[in-house]
Length: 475
Ligand code: URA
Image (cartoon, rainbow, N blue to C red; front, side, top):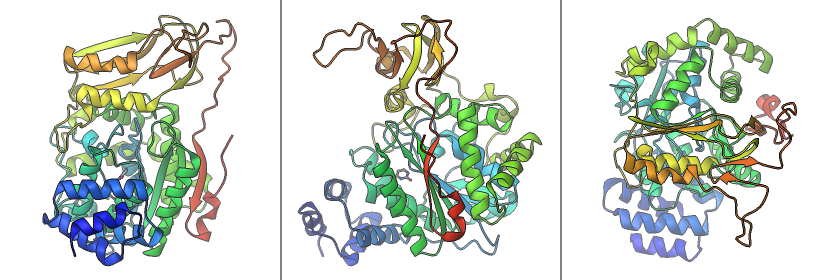
Protein backbone atom coordinates (compact mmCIF):
# COMPACT_ATOMS: atom_id res chain seq x y z
CA UNK A 1 0.00 0.00 0.00
CA UNK A 2 1.13 3.57 -0.68
CA UNK A 3 0.04 6.68 1.18
CA UNK A 4 -0.34 8.63 -2.06
CA UNK A 5 -2.84 6.08 -3.43
CA UNK A 6 -4.92 6.36 -0.27
CA UNK A 7 -4.87 10.17 -0.53
CA UNK A 8 -5.94 10.17 -4.19
CA UNK A 9 -8.63 7.56 -3.57
CA UNK A 10 -10.16 9.74 -0.87
CA UNK A 11 -9.64 12.90 -2.93
CA UNK A 12 -11.66 11.33 -5.72
CA UNK A 13 -14.51 10.45 -3.37
CA UNK A 14 -14.17 6.68 -2.95
CA UNK A 15 -14.60 5.14 0.49
CA UNK A 16 -11.44 3.71 2.05
CA UNK A 17 -11.22 0.19 3.44
CA UNK A 18 -10.45 -0.30 7.12
CA UNK A 19 -7.05 -1.78 6.09
CA UNK A 20 -6.20 1.40 4.18
CA UNK A 21 -7.26 3.59 7.12
CA UNK A 22 -5.25 1.49 9.60
CA UNK A 23 -2.21 1.58 7.28
CA UNK A 24 -2.41 5.35 7.00
CA UNK A 25 -2.87 5.99 10.74
CA UNK A 26 -0.12 3.52 11.69
CA UNK A 27 2.27 5.09 9.18
CA UNK A 28 1.54 8.61 10.35
CA UNK A 29 1.87 7.68 14.04
CA UNK A 30 5.24 6.02 13.49
CA UNK A 31 6.60 8.69 11.16
CA UNK A 32 6.77 6.77 7.86
CA UNK A 33 3.97 8.99 6.52
CA UNK A 34 5.01 12.67 6.81
CA UNK A 35 2.94 15.68 7.88
CA UNK A 36 2.47 16.91 4.30
CA UNK A 37 0.79 13.68 3.22
CA UNK A 38 -1.34 13.55 6.35
CA UNK A 39 -2.36 17.18 5.76
CA UNK A 40 -3.39 16.37 2.17
CA UNK A 41 -5.35 13.36 3.40
CA UNK A 42 -7.14 15.42 6.08
CA UNK A 43 -8.09 17.97 3.42
CA UNK A 44 -9.45 15.17 1.19
CA UNK A 45 -11.52 13.87 4.12
CA UNK A 46 -12.66 17.40 4.87
CA UNK A 47 -14.09 17.80 1.38
CA UNK A 48 -15.23 14.23 0.64
CA UNK A 49 -16.41 13.19 4.11
CA UNK A 50 -16.45 9.59 5.31
CA UNK A 51 -19.06 6.87 5.51
CA UNK A 52 -20.02 5.58 8.94
CA UNK A 53 -17.90 2.40 8.58
CA UNK A 54 -14.91 4.56 7.57
CA UNK A 55 -15.41 6.85 10.59
CA UNK A 56 -15.62 3.85 12.92
CA UNK A 57 -12.45 2.36 11.36
CA UNK A 58 -10.64 5.70 11.75
CA UNK A 59 -11.72 6.01 15.39
CA UNK A 60 -10.58 2.50 16.27
CA UNK A 61 -7.27 2.91 14.40
CA UNK A 62 -6.57 6.11 16.36
CA UNK A 63 -7.72 4.65 19.70
CA UNK A 64 -5.48 1.60 19.17
CA UNK A 65 -2.48 3.67 18.03
CA UNK A 66 -1.47 3.42 21.70
CA UNK A 67 -2.66 1.63 24.80
CA UNK A 68 -6.40 1.29 25.48
CA UNK A 69 -6.84 1.60 29.24
CA UNK A 70 -8.92 -0.73 31.34
CA UNK A 71 -9.54 1.07 34.63
CA UNK A 72 -12.01 -1.37 36.16
CA UNK A 73 -9.53 -2.43 38.82
CA UNK A 74 -9.75 1.16 40.12
CA UNK A 75 -13.54 1.67 39.94
CA UNK A 76 -16.49 -0.19 38.40
CA UNK A 77 -17.80 2.79 36.42
CA UNK A 78 -15.72 5.80 35.45
CA UNK A 79 -17.16 8.97 33.92
CA UNK A 80 -15.82 11.30 31.28
CA UNK A 81 -17.08 14.22 29.20
CA UNK A 82 -15.85 15.93 26.08
CA UNK A 83 -16.73 19.17 24.37
CA UNK A 84 -16.61 19.41 20.60
CA UNK A 85 -14.85 22.76 21.03
CA UNK A 86 -15.99 26.25 21.86
CA UNK A 87 -15.02 29.67 23.14
CA UNK A 88 -14.77 30.25 26.90
CA UNK A 89 -15.56 26.58 27.54
CA UNK A 90 -13.85 25.86 30.85
CA UNK A 91 -16.50 23.30 31.86
CA UNK A 92 -14.07 20.45 32.58
CA UNK A 93 -12.27 22.51 35.23
CA UNK A 94 -15.47 22.69 37.26
CA UNK A 95 -17.27 19.46 36.51
CA UNK A 96 -14.35 17.02 36.82
CA UNK A 97 -13.88 17.77 40.55
CA UNK A 98 -17.62 18.35 41.07
CA UNK A 99 -18.58 14.93 39.69
CA UNK A 100 -15.69 13.27 41.53
CA UNK A 101 -16.89 14.93 44.76
CA UNK A 102 -20.22 13.11 44.20
CA UNK A 103 -18.35 9.79 44.33
CA UNK A 104 -18.10 9.21 40.57
CA UNK A 105 -14.45 8.92 39.45
CA UNK A 106 -13.55 11.02 36.40
CA UNK A 107 -10.75 10.03 34.01
CA UNK A 108 -10.40 12.34 31.05
CA UNK A 109 -8.10 12.62 28.10
CA UNK A 110 -8.27 16.21 26.89
CA UNK A 111 -7.02 18.29 24.00
CA UNK A 112 -5.24 21.56 23.41
CA UNK A 113 -6.48 24.73 21.75
CA UNK A 114 -7.76 24.07 18.23
CA UNK A 115 -8.36 26.93 15.78
CA UNK A 116 -10.46 29.58 17.53
CA UNK A 117 -11.48 27.13 20.25
CA UNK A 118 -9.63 26.90 23.56
CA UNK A 119 -8.13 23.69 24.98
CA UNK A 120 -8.50 22.33 28.51
CA UNK A 121 -4.85 21.29 28.76
CA UNK A 122 -3.60 24.76 27.82
CA UNK A 123 -5.91 26.27 30.43
CA UNK A 124 -4.74 23.87 33.13
CA UNK A 125 -1.10 24.55 32.27
CA UNK A 126 -1.62 28.18 33.34
CA UNK A 127 -1.39 26.75 36.85
CA UNK A 128 2.35 26.72 37.66
CA UNK A 129 3.70 23.16 37.80
CA UNK A 130 0.56 21.45 36.44
CA UNK A 131 1.51 18.41 34.34
CA UNK A 132 -0.81 17.44 31.48
CA UNK A 133 1.50 14.81 29.98
CA UNK A 134 1.05 11.91 32.38
CA UNK A 135 2.34 8.43 31.62
CA UNK A 136 -0.19 5.61 31.84
CA UNK A 137 1.07 4.70 35.32
CA UNK A 138 0.77 8.29 36.50
CA UNK A 139 -2.72 8.56 34.97
CA UNK A 140 -3.86 5.46 36.84
CA UNK A 141 -2.23 6.55 40.09
CA UNK A 142 -3.80 10.04 40.02
CA UNK A 143 -7.21 8.46 39.39
CA UNK A 144 -6.78 5.94 42.21
CA UNK A 145 -5.45 8.57 44.65
CA UNK A 146 -7.94 11.39 44.17
CA UNK A 147 -10.72 10.14 41.88
CA UNK A 148 -10.04 12.64 39.09
CA UNK A 149 -7.38 12.88 36.40
CA UNK A 150 -7.11 14.91 33.18
CA UNK A 151 -4.24 14.34 30.78
CA UNK A 152 -3.29 14.75 27.13
CA UNK A 153 -2.41 12.17 24.52
CA UNK A 154 1.04 10.69 25.00
CA UNK A 155 3.21 8.21 23.18
CA UNK A 156 1.08 5.62 24.96
CA UNK A 157 -2.42 7.10 24.80
CA UNK A 158 -4.07 7.85 21.44
CA UNK A 159 -0.81 9.25 19.97
CA UNK A 160 -2.34 9.34 16.47
CA UNK A 161 -4.94 11.83 17.64
CA UNK A 162 -2.26 13.95 19.33
CA UNK A 163 -0.41 14.29 16.01
CA UNK A 164 -3.44 14.69 13.75
CA UNK A 165 -5.11 17.18 16.12
CA UNK A 166 -2.09 19.49 16.03
CA UNK A 167 -1.86 19.15 12.23
CA UNK A 168 -5.56 19.88 11.66
CA UNK A 169 -5.29 22.96 13.86
CA UNK A 170 -2.94 24.64 11.38
CA UNK A 171 -4.22 23.23 8.08
CA UNK A 172 -7.85 24.37 8.07
CA UNK A 173 -9.17 20.84 8.52
CA UNK A 174 -10.83 21.01 11.92
CA UNK A 175 -14.51 21.41 11.07
CA UNK A 176 -15.18 17.96 9.65
CA UNK A 177 -17.66 15.56 11.29
CA UNK A 178 -15.62 12.36 10.73
CA UNK A 179 -12.38 14.04 11.86
CA UNK A 180 -13.93 15.55 14.99
CA UNK A 181 -15.93 12.42 15.84
CA UNK A 182 -12.92 10.12 15.48
CA UNK A 183 -10.64 12.54 17.35
CA UNK A 184 -12.99 12.77 20.31
CA UNK A 185 -14.11 9.16 20.43
CA UNK A 186 -10.60 7.72 20.01
CA UNK A 187 -9.54 9.64 23.13
CA UNK A 188 -12.65 8.51 24.98
CA UNK A 189 -12.12 4.86 24.04
CA UNK A 190 -8.40 4.92 24.89
CA UNK A 191 -9.06 6.79 28.16
CA UNK A 192 -11.05 3.87 29.59
CA UNK A 193 -14.22 5.67 30.79
CA UNK A 194 -17.54 3.78 30.77
CA UNK A 195 -20.00 6.70 31.07
CA UNK A 196 -19.30 9.44 28.55
CA UNK A 197 -21.20 12.71 28.09
CA UNK A 198 -20.55 14.52 24.82
CA UNK A 199 -21.10 18.26 24.87
CA UNK A 200 -21.69 19.13 21.22
CA UNK A 201 -21.50 22.86 20.64
CA UNK A 202 -23.47 24.68 17.96
CA UNK A 203 -23.20 28.28 16.73
CA UNK A 204 -20.61 30.78 15.52
CA UNK A 205 -18.19 29.81 18.27
CA UNK A 206 -18.37 26.10 17.43
CA UNK A 207 -17.13 23.92 14.60
CA UNK A 208 -20.74 22.94 13.88
CA UNK A 209 -22.68 26.06 12.93
CA UNK A 210 -26.15 24.56 12.51
CA UNK A 211 -28.21 22.32 14.75
CA UNK A 212 -28.49 19.76 11.95
CA UNK A 213 -24.67 19.50 11.74
CA UNK A 214 -24.39 19.29 15.52
CA UNK A 215 -27.05 16.57 15.69
CA UNK A 216 -25.21 14.65 12.97
CA UNK A 217 -21.94 14.88 14.94
CA UNK A 218 -23.73 13.86 18.15
CA UNK A 219 -25.35 10.86 16.45
CA UNK A 220 -22.07 9.77 14.87
CA UNK A 221 -20.24 9.87 18.20
CA UNK A 222 -22.96 8.20 20.26
CA UNK A 223 -23.19 5.43 17.71
CA UNK A 224 -19.40 4.87 17.77
CA UNK A 225 -19.48 4.79 21.59
CA UNK A 226 -22.42 2.38 21.67
CA UNK A 227 -20.64 0.18 19.15
CA UNK A 228 -17.76 -0.31 21.59
CA UNK A 229 -20.01 -0.93 24.58
CA UNK A 230 -19.76 2.44 26.34
CA UNK A 231 -22.69 4.35 27.89
CA UNK A 232 -22.87 7.60 25.96
CA UNK A 233 -25.16 10.65 26.08
CA UNK A 234 -24.87 13.83 24.04
CA UNK A 235 -26.05 17.34 24.85
CA UNK A 236 -26.22 19.96 22.13
CA UNK A 237 -25.47 23.34 23.64
CA UNK A 238 -25.39 26.90 22.40
CA UNK A 239 -22.06 28.44 21.40
CA UNK A 240 -23.26 31.52 19.58
CA UNK A 241 -21.74 33.65 22.33
CA UNK A 242 -18.83 32.65 24.59
CA UNK A 243 -19.65 30.56 27.65
CA UNK A 244 -19.29 32.60 30.86
CA UNK A 245 -17.30 35.81 30.79
CA UNK A 246 -13.65 34.81 30.37
CA UNK A 247 -11.95 33.72 27.13
CA UNK A 248 -8.28 32.77 27.39
CA UNK A 249 -6.24 30.48 29.59
CA UNK A 250 -5.40 31.94 33.03
CA UNK A 251 -8.53 34.13 32.95
CA UNK A 252 -10.67 31.02 32.43
CA UNK A 253 -8.95 29.16 35.28
CA UNK A 254 -9.74 32.13 37.52
CA UNK A 255 -13.41 32.01 36.48
CA UNK A 256 -13.56 28.25 37.11
CA UNK A 257 -12.15 28.75 40.63
CA UNK A 258 -14.74 31.46 41.30
CA UNK A 259 -17.46 29.04 40.16
CA UNK A 260 -16.18 26.27 42.42
CA UNK A 261 -16.25 28.81 45.25
CA UNK A 262 -19.98 29.34 44.64
CA UNK A 263 -19.73 32.42 42.38
CA UNK A 264 -19.06 32.53 38.66
CA UNK A 265 -21.35 33.46 35.77
CA UNK A 266 -24.88 32.05 35.88
CA UNK A 267 -24.85 30.72 32.29
CA UNK A 268 -21.61 28.86 32.92
CA UNK A 269 -22.79 27.38 36.23
CA UNK A 270 -26.05 26.21 34.68
CA UNK A 271 -24.16 24.53 31.86
CA UNK A 272 -21.82 22.79 34.32
CA UNK A 273 -24.78 21.51 36.36
CA UNK A 274 -26.48 20.00 33.30
CA UNK A 275 -23.36 18.25 31.98
CA UNK A 276 -22.33 17.06 35.46
CA UNK A 277 -25.92 15.89 36.11
CA UNK A 278 -25.87 13.78 32.92
CA UNK A 279 -22.53 12.31 33.98
CA UNK A 280 -23.66 11.18 37.41
CA UNK A 281 -26.93 9.80 36.01
CA UNK A 282 -25.11 7.90 33.28
CA UNK A 283 -22.69 6.54 35.88
CA UNK A 284 -25.69 5.22 37.83
CA UNK A 285 -25.25 7.51 40.85
CA UNK A 286 -28.60 9.25 40.52
CA UNK A 287 -31.94 8.23 39.04
CA UNK A 288 -33.42 11.67 38.48
CA UNK A 289 -32.28 15.03 37.18
CA UNK A 290 -33.66 16.75 40.29
CA UNK A 291 -31.72 14.51 42.66
CA UNK A 292 -28.58 14.90 40.55
CA UNK A 293 -28.90 18.70 40.57
CA UNK A 294 -29.48 18.71 44.33
CA UNK A 295 -26.41 16.53 44.96
CA UNK A 296 -24.25 18.73 42.74
CA UNK A 297 -25.41 21.94 44.44
CA UNK A 298 -24.70 20.38 47.86
CA UNK A 299 -21.14 19.52 46.80
CA UNK A 300 -20.57 23.08 45.58
CA UNK A 301 -22.08 24.70 48.66
CA UNK A 302 -20.20 22.49 51.13
CA UNK A 303 -16.84 23.20 49.50
CA UNK A 304 -16.39 19.49 48.67
CA UNK A 305 -15.99 20.26 44.94
CA UNK A 306 -13.36 22.92 45.64
CA UNK A 307 -11.51 20.53 47.98
CA UNK A 308 -11.53 17.90 45.22
CA UNK A 309 -10.19 20.49 42.76
CA UNK A 310 -7.32 21.18 45.19
CA UNK A 311 -6.50 17.44 45.52
CA UNK A 312 -6.60 17.03 41.74
CA UNK A 313 -4.34 19.99 40.97
CA UNK A 314 -1.86 18.81 43.64
CA UNK A 315 -1.93 15.23 42.29
CA UNK A 316 -0.84 16.53 38.87
CA UNK A 317 1.93 18.72 40.29
CA UNK A 318 0.11 22.08 40.18
CA UNK A 319 0.64 24.86 42.70
CA UNK A 320 -2.53 24.91 44.81
CA UNK A 321 -1.68 28.37 46.16
CA UNK A 322 -3.44 29.79 43.06
CA UNK A 323 -6.72 28.40 44.40
CA UNK A 324 -6.57 30.60 47.51
CA UNK A 325 -4.98 33.48 45.66
CA UNK A 326 -5.85 33.52 41.92
CA UNK A 327 -3.63 36.63 41.59
CA UNK A 328 -0.76 34.13 41.50
CA UNK A 329 -1.98 32.95 38.08
CA UNK A 330 -0.07 34.43 35.12
CA UNK A 331 -1.22 38.03 34.60
CA UNK A 332 -1.06 40.15 31.45
CA UNK A 333 0.85 43.43 31.77
CA UNK A 334 -1.58 45.38 29.56
CA UNK A 335 -5.27 45.55 30.32
CA UNK A 336 -7.53 47.65 28.11
CA UNK A 337 -11.23 48.17 28.59
CA UNK A 338 -13.41 48.61 25.50
CA UNK A 339 -16.49 50.81 26.03
CA UNK A 340 -19.81 50.46 24.25
CA UNK A 341 -20.06 52.88 21.35
CA UNK A 342 -23.80 53.21 21.87
CA UNK A 343 -26.69 52.68 24.24
CA UNK A 344 -28.86 49.63 23.53
CA UNK A 345 -29.39 45.92 24.03
CA UNK A 346 -26.56 43.53 23.35
CA UNK A 347 -27.98 41.61 20.42
CA UNK A 348 -25.10 39.24 19.60
CA UNK A 349 -21.56 38.43 20.67
CA UNK A 350 -19.63 36.74 17.93
CA UNK A 351 -17.88 33.98 19.84
CA UNK A 352 -15.66 33.04 16.91
CA UNK A 353 -14.31 36.60 16.59
CA UNK A 354 -13.39 36.53 20.27
CA UNK A 355 -11.78 33.10 19.92
CA UNK A 356 -9.60 34.33 17.05
CA UNK A 357 -8.82 37.55 18.93
CA UNK A 358 -7.40 35.48 21.78
CA UNK A 359 -5.33 33.44 19.29
CA UNK A 360 -4.01 36.78 17.90
CA UNK A 361 -3.10 37.85 21.41
CA UNK A 362 -0.97 34.70 21.70
CA UNK A 363 -3.45 32.62 23.71
CA UNK A 364 -3.80 29.99 20.93
CA UNK A 365 -1.59 28.59 18.20
CA UNK A 366 -0.99 29.75 14.64
CA UNK A 367 1.79 27.16 14.07
CA UNK A 368 1.84 23.51 15.06
CA UNK A 369 3.33 23.04 18.53
CA UNK A 370 3.95 26.79 19.08
CA UNK A 371 4.10 27.95 22.71
CA UNK A 372 1.16 29.93 23.99
CA UNK A 373 0.89 32.90 26.31
CA UNK A 374 -1.24 31.85 29.28
CA UNK A 375 -1.59 35.44 30.53
CA UNK A 376 -3.66 36.83 27.69
CA UNK A 377 -7.39 36.80 27.07
CA UNK A 378 -10.60 38.75 26.95
CA UNK A 379 -13.11 39.14 29.75
CA UNK A 380 -16.62 40.02 28.66
CA UNK A 381 -18.95 42.34 30.51
CA UNK A 382 -22.66 42.25 29.57
CA UNK A 383 -23.89 39.24 27.63
CA UNK A 384 -26.59 38.89 24.98
CA UNK A 385 -29.87 40.41 26.13
CA UNK A 386 -28.31 42.91 28.54
CA UNK A 387 -28.87 46.63 28.34
CA UNK A 388 -25.75 48.77 27.99
CA UNK A 389 -25.23 52.50 28.18
CA UNK A 390 -22.88 54.28 25.81
CA UNK A 391 -19.41 54.24 27.36
CA UNK A 392 -20.15 51.31 29.66
CA UNK A 393 -17.38 48.67 29.51
CA UNK A 394 -18.19 45.94 26.98
CA UNK A 395 -15.10 43.81 27.51
CA UNK A 396 -11.52 43.91 28.76
CA UNK A 397 -8.52 42.86 26.71
CA UNK A 398 -5.58 41.29 28.58
CA UNK A 399 -2.51 41.56 26.34
CA UNK A 400 1.15 40.64 26.61
CA UNK A 401 2.46 43.70 24.73
CA UNK A 402 1.37 46.52 22.46
CA UNK A 403 2.19 44.70 19.26
CA UNK A 404 -0.18 41.94 20.27
CA UNK A 405 -2.88 44.40 21.18
CA UNK A 406 -3.26 45.54 17.57
CA UNK A 407 -4.66 42.33 16.10
CA UNK A 408 -7.29 42.64 18.74
CA UNK A 409 -8.87 45.35 16.63
CA UNK A 410 -10.76 42.30 15.39
CA UNK A 411 -12.74 42.47 18.58
CA UNK A 412 -12.62 46.20 19.17
CA UNK A 413 -13.89 46.74 15.73
CA UNK A 414 -15.25 49.38 13.50
CA UNK A 415 -17.45 52.21 14.60
CA UNK A 416 -20.26 51.66 12.12
CA UNK A 417 -21.98 48.58 10.81
CA UNK A 418 -22.04 48.53 6.99
CA UNK A 419 -25.05 47.52 4.99
CA UNK A 420 -24.72 45.03 2.15
CA UNK A 421 -24.28 47.98 -0.22
CA UNK A 422 -21.37 49.26 1.84
CA UNK A 423 -23.24 52.25 3.24
CA UNK A 424 -23.21 53.06 6.89
CA UNK A 425 -26.46 51.89 8.39
CA UNK A 426 -28.18 54.59 10.37
CA UNK A 427 -29.46 52.60 13.30
CA UNK A 428 -26.72 50.22 14.24
CA UNK A 429 -23.15 50.51 15.41
CA UNK A 430 -21.14 47.54 16.37
CA UNK A 431 -17.83 45.99 17.19
CA UNK A 432 -17.54 43.09 14.77
CA UNK A 433 -17.04 40.77 17.70
CA UNK A 434 -19.70 42.35 19.81
CA UNK A 435 -22.83 43.90 18.35
CA UNK A 436 -25.22 46.13 20.17
CA UNK A 437 -28.75 46.18 18.85
CA UNK A 438 -29.62 49.77 18.32
CA UNK A 439 -33.25 49.47 17.49
CA UNK A 440 -33.10 50.87 20.92
CA UNK A 441 -35.67 51.01 23.61
CA UNK A 442 -35.27 54.05 25.86
CA UNK A 443 -32.86 53.50 28.75
CA UNK A 444 -35.62 53.48 31.35
CA UNK A 445 -37.37 50.53 29.65
CA UNK A 446 -37.32 47.53 31.98
CA UNK A 447 -34.77 44.87 31.11
CA UNK A 448 -36.35 42.78 28.34
CA UNK A 449 -33.85 40.48 26.66
CA UNK A 450 -34.34 40.56 22.92
CA UNK A 451 -32.59 37.22 22.38
CA UNK A 452 -33.40 34.51 24.87
CA UNK A 453 -30.43 32.54 26.12
CA UNK A 454 -30.79 29.03 24.81
CA UNK A 455 -28.41 26.89 26.79
CA UNK A 456 -29.32 23.43 25.47
CA UNK A 457 -31.38 22.52 22.49
CA UNK A 458 -31.40 18.76 22.06
CA UNK A 459 -30.16 15.87 24.16
CA UNK A 460 -29.49 12.49 22.55
CA UNK A 461 -28.91 9.36 24.58
CA UNK A 462 -27.48 6.11 23.40
CA UNK A 463 -29.60 3.76 25.49
CA UNK A 464 -33.23 3.60 26.54
CA UNK A 465 -32.47 3.85 30.27
CA UNK A 466 -31.05 7.32 29.76
CA UNK A 467 -33.88 8.51 27.56
CA UNK A 468 -35.08 10.78 30.31
CA UNK A 469 -32.22 13.03 29.16
CA UNK A 470 -33.71 12.99 25.69
CA UNK A 471 -35.74 16.12 25.30
CA UNK A 472 -36.11 19.12 23.13
CA UNK A 473 -35.17 22.25 24.93
CA UNK A 474 -35.57 24.55 21.99
CA UNK A 475 -37.27 27.79 22.86
N1 URA B 1 -12.14 18.20 20.34
C1 URA B 1 -11.34 17.16 20.01
O1 URA B 1 -10.85 16.44 20.87
N2 URA B 1 -11.11 16.94 18.71
C2 URA B 1 -11.62 17.70 17.73
O2 URA B 1 -11.37 17.44 16.58
C3 URA B 1 -12.45 18.79 18.09
C4 URA B 1 -12.70 19.02 19.41
